[in-house]
View 1: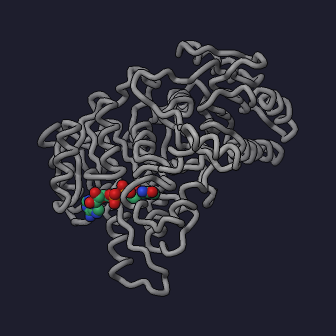
View 2 (view 1 turned 60 degrees about the vertical axis):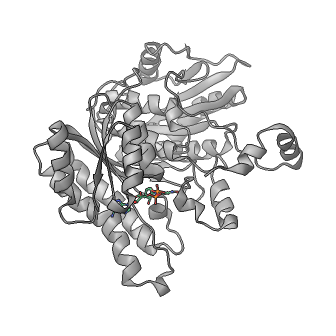
View 3 (view 1 turned 90 degrees about the horizontal axis):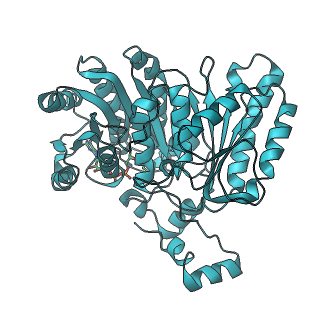
Length: 446
Ligand code: NAI
C-alpha cells in the first residue's frame, strides 16, 4: 500500500502548497540499500569518558569521518553522546548543551545516539536520576528532530563495555539505514556475547532461518531481507496461502512449508523440514499473526481463542519443541513479532493485545533459558506498517494512525524485517530478552 499524501507533499507543486499551508511533510526516510554508506557525513562523538574515546577509536576502524567536536555549519551524519558516567542530573548539562549547538547542522536522515547505563542498575538515587534523565531527554529530542533524522539509545548493562560486540552492533544498527523507522527507542546490551558487526552486507551468510506467515505482508519481506543478508530461508504459511508462499519461496531461493502453526506438532514439523534439507535450524522468526477485532462487550470464543492460539500459544509450543532439539543452533536465535498494541493497548483489540503482550512476556522469560544454549530471543514491536492488514482500516482512522508518530508516516514491512535481521545476526548475540519498537516513535504508548 502506498502513502499517496506523502508522495504528493514531497514533489513539485504539492511540496510548495504543503509548505505554505504548514501541512505535515513526512520526509523520505534514509533506508538501507546494499552498498550504501553507513552515514551521510561526519560523526561527532561527544563525552569525556574513557568509553567515548574507545568508541571514537572503534568508529575510525569503520572508515567513518569521526570528530570529537563539531565544526559549526558542517553537515553532520550523526552525533553520538556518550553518557555512561553520568552520576548526577547536573552532569547532563555540558554534553547535552554541546550537542544542542550542532543540531541545526544535522543532515537529512542523520542519527543522534546516546550511549548510557540502565537506571535500574545505578548505585545511588542521584545516578539513577541522571540515567533515567537520559531516557526522557532522548525520547524528547527524537520528537524534535526533522527531515527523517532519528534519535535512539544504547544501554550498556553492568559488565558490558562500549567496545563489546553487541554494543558496537547496536550503534551500527542505529547509525545505518536499517533502522530508518526506529525512533525514540532504547536497546539494552546485556551480555558480552556475539561477534563483531559485519560490514560485508551478508551478516546472515550460512544461516538456516524459518519464517512463519511468509506468504505475504511483513513475513514475505522478512524472508526477502534474511535472504538478502545471506540466510537460507524456510517459508512457512497456511496451505490456503500455498500459491503466494511458493512464489515468495522461489523469489528468495528458499523452500516452502505449508503448515498451520496452531497444530500441536508444528514445532516438530518445522524442525523436521529444516533437518532433512539443511541438517539444522539457526533462526526462528515468529511472524504469523491474526486479528479478530471486537469490543470486549461483544467478544466471543470464536474471536478470542484463535487470536491467542495463533499469536502466542503456537509460539510457546514451537519454542518448546525447538529448544528441546539438538538441531537448533549452535547459537540459536528466536525473533518474535509483537505489536505496539500489546504495549499501549488498543480499543477493540483486547484479544490481540493480550496475545502480543504475551509475546513480550514469553520473550523475557525465555531469554535466560535460551542463553544457556548460547542463544538469544527478542521481539520486535511494529507500530503502523503499510500492509494488507492496515489497508483494511477505514480511511480517516488510517490517516490518523499513519501520521501519529514522530516521522509522520507509516513504516514499511521492510523496516520491521531489517530490525529482525539485525536481531537474528551473530553480532546481536549480547542482546537478549529485549523488545525493540519499530514504530517511528508512535505517540501511542510512547
Ligand atoms: P498479514 O495478515 O498480511 O500476514 C500474516 C500471514 O500469516 C498471512 O500470510 C497468513 O496466511 C499467515 N498466517 C495466519 N495464520 C497462520 C497460521 N495459523 N499458520 C501459518 N500461517 C498463518 O499480516 P502482517 O500485517 O504482515 O502482519 C505480520 C505480523 O506483524 C503479525 O504478527 C501482526 O500481528 C504483526 N503486526 C503488524 C502490524 C501492521 O501494521 N501491519 C503492526 C503490528 C504488528
